[in-house]
Image 1 (cartoon, protein in one colour):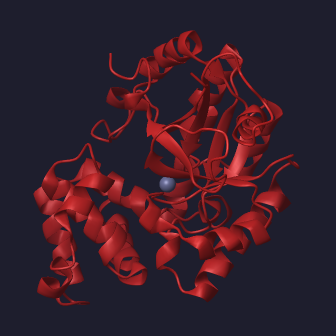
Image 2 (cartoon, protein in one colour):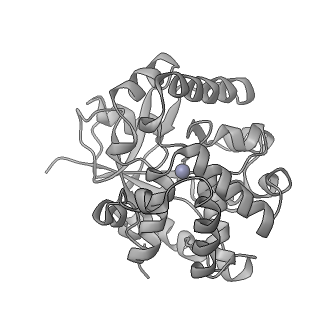
Length: 313
Ligand SMILES: [Zn+2]
């Protein structure tokens, strides 16, 4: 049987009970440490270079390849994940949301996570709908939430939480949603500018990660579902992201990208055209599966860490 490339996807990796937000959904650091050993037993750990050579038919490994990817440029990717990868001699690929580093912004998806992990869910939803109702017709927007699509995009959540996340991520206009979440975040948690530097990797830290053998990639400038943007907004977002990456990071042989949200409804051929124009060499989705030679380099499939060896203790 011919080999496959398994790309594992991580977001929060932290010692959750000892953080201010123990209710965040994430991977415990101890589990991550154990999973690295399990992955090294099962697979040949790939670098971005060997993974792409494999997909292009230029490299035939003795067994399946496994590549580790980390979305969102979270602080622990620098502070905890990188040292563990270095210890194991593994390269990680880390995807940055450039507005978070450059403008001390919080991605609305993370403000939403922090609010969900701080407030009681019913209280949060009520406060959200209260502010939302001053801007849009609630019955009209709720009709546009498809429960099945909602559950697919948030497999680990209850139907209520999945539907709420879907409303926030896919149904509401980005400006409306971001303004409501921003208002709530400022009221209940902190100002974005004071919070973001503790939440995200800085440019200095990103360069230190490159020096340690890690590869950095773009995850867009504003972390919006790129397929929902106008042509002008799409071009601006992707261009700004790639310009900031190249201006602030050391040069790399290859510039990868990870689509925000990442299901096939979050990017399209126009998105890929813009990425190519800006010098992006490959892009990762969140569509589930493994990859074989000849696969589209701009729609690389991934699996959640829970579905990889060592993911379920
Ligand atoms: Zn993301």
